[in-house]
Image (cartoon, rainbow, N blue to C red):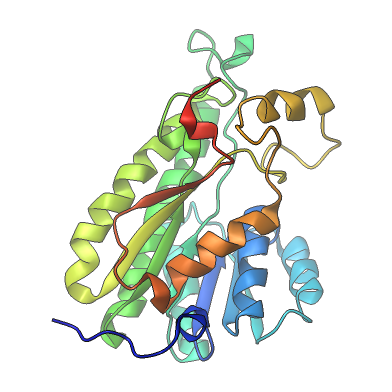
Amino acid sequence: MTTPDPRPLPDRLRMDGRHALVTGAASGLGLAIAEGLLQCGAAVTLLDRDAEELERSAAALAAAGGPISTRCCDVSEPAAVEAAVAAAAQEHGGLHAVFANAGIAGGPSIRSEEGRVYDMDWKTFDGALAVNLIGTLATVRAAARAMRPAGGGSIVVTVSTAGLRADAMVGYGYSASKGALANLVRQAAVDLAPDGIRVNGIAPGPFHTNIGGRGPKDPAVDQAWADTVLLARMGHTQEIQGMALLLASDAASFMTGGVYPVDGGALTGVF
């Protein structure tokens, strides 16, 4: 039986002296998560496969707080993930929190003819699983291997509301991979609890990110997403930071195996 943490809540939410690693950190939710961790005292490693954007983002975060380092890595290559995570942990003297956040859209939605099962492209489907599922599992394994010698840590997986129910706005690759991640979180939580490693998931709803492409946003598509949300809008990346910080911190010391929506009420299912 553990004893209660005597520190006040604000101190338990702080990340001073901790090292966190975020995959898919060059933009979108990953970048916002990294920013929030830095603001709360953590040293952060940004990992992404886009080297140029990674360096631009690291420079932009310089004023946010603690030390920042970068690792260029494609998470669909498990051996590369293993090496990058191990090197980052060695560089910072340990690893306390990891966000397995990297992901791709994985093809057109089932609202389009090319996205329906009749004409679904297998290569695109396999690519989504390689990044979203295999890449996440590789990140979880690498993180656990780095955390176990120190007696624990926190792993947070970016799932999706599309992993918790059907979603006509996404394609088969995204839906299948994110659905698998919801159960991967639970499986890893059971596996790693004896080692003091907590595993949780965040299920974002529609957020303004580059996952669907970097070009101009289609207002009609944004409105279609907003129409699925109880709060009648898409989320801003900053709005993921509270849940991310909580799950990484000691304030969530009794939380593992859960997948927590940050979705503006999309999962209420009233639409």
